[in-house]
Length: 606
Image (cartoon, rainbow, N blue to C red; front, side, top):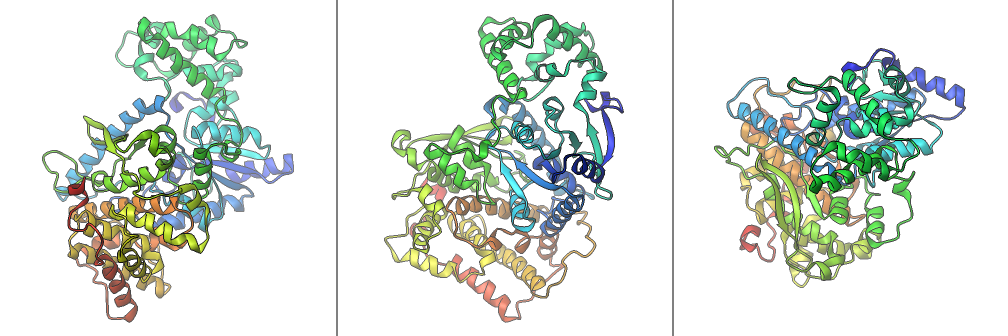
């Protein structure tokens, strides 16, 4: 769409200028609403992810960006997504499959020792912690569709000067004075491009009141392209391959709108009129009508009242989600499970090709832990769901393997997750740890000496490495996918990062170049650890206050480039000092602790 926009619709601006103008005109402190998933990757463009993540650099970039926004006189508010909408899944799966194929091509190049193998840094779940704990920003976890929530929030707050995102839907919403492009963001002078909804309507001679309907009938995530393809061809008499350009399509669609619809019609009546033009099939017409109705409700912002995330909870699920969202490490998976009874996984840096599958996919390695996490979330519904309940899992393991069934494991003891996550009483710590150890090991340790032994050994570990210790325990002792040399490899990384921190040195002065030929095995090991950090962090976060914030700070325990160097023995961490030996011995003592049921792996138990 952007290529079809004229300079009056899409033009460059200084963020500082528009903030100061807005403040002078309105006499208030401006807010900029930032769509985090589309903006944060732009900030870190060029920061490579292929080695597993450069978290120190990432934190510095994000902190500097927030500081620059504040120097302009505005306060940023960041929005993250909630559960995925089922009607958008078809389009989302297509993107995931494309991403899967891209990753497989990349992994093939790594396997063949190709040079200059890079991939842009991805969202990992660490961002909310950086924004809240390091930057002191307000972070909103959307209860419904993120774009709608941002637009509704903007409509309800008179001091919102701009929305920063990269989604054509915001051109339709027209919810803030300025819609700033995250794609064109220039950090050197904090400038970007503005998309003007009113100018867009003027250029295309469209009444701006019809923009929500126009957005519904242009290609979007709500209505699959296959449904719209023939509709476009008929409207434009298109006879060539592909689709007409936007400058041809928009007038044709708007002419259809003016001919068949009225603004005083309800969205249900509009959908009823539109659906027959999208499909001739009587059987699919009602489904198409529902898709159109949902899209119209979305673009007219009828699904999301302002402040929905702060609305008073009235059910157990709402109360639980309201409490879980307070955590800076809240995972959208919790909302997917509680509201939609499914889970979705993004593609990791893994080689999943059938001809070379040396390493088990991380989604499979952590599936037993995840099944217990889901069982913990749904435990209040256990009596109605039954012990054999399965949940849909959307994870692209191949082009033809997307939808899977995962059997849920419920806690073998009474647990009220809402009470646990609300409590910061030290007396609740034992119950939280009992639940945590069950999630990690698959067994209830409480009636044996094992829980007290696990507790004792776990809390001898350095606080910032608590989650790492649990991940290594799971990989080595429960799933047995890591051997002791690999465990010690990760401990070497932790020790080296700690030594740098202890000497208050900058790990990356001026930034560093990523290794042009990353080691194939090291890439997989990094993925395995980082996916484990996410999986265990979900459980810990669901239990409420338990571990210190430092244990969630990725820069404390992982650096991709450094890990590659340690793996290749280009860097050899020293264990001569007492602190290094203490860190190592504490983790190994915990990992080597006996636990009930260790004689069989979780896969064998399942």
